[in-house]
Length: 107
Image 1 (cartoon, rainbow, N blue to C red):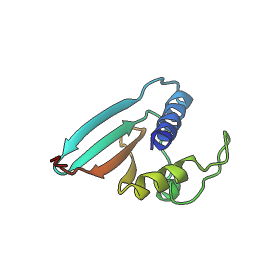
Image 2 (cartoon, rainbow, N blue to C red; image 1 turned 90 degrees about the vertical axis):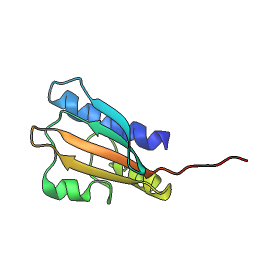
Image 3 (cartoon, rainbow, N blue to C red; image 1 turned 135 degrees about the horizontal axis):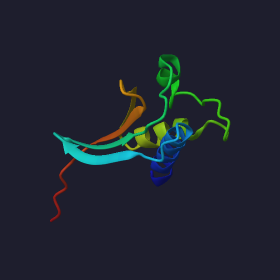
């Protein structure tokens, strides 16, 4: 899972830097029965079509094979989590990695 999160962070940083902004916002919070890692970039966002495909099929990339987001989705989903991505009205994109929290009782 660290590689999946690294890839998402790296892509978010690249998007922000492409717009001349060396900034990301990260939050980790518990919401009801979920743990949510939110990653906000300050890039230009994506078209609705590209956003819908991101993480579900390999994407063409100028810096690699375009497999990073696809593999990140597979990894997170194989661990019972989900990834959501949305464009923000003020620009940039919000990626959320969501896991259901569970209580573990040790005897």
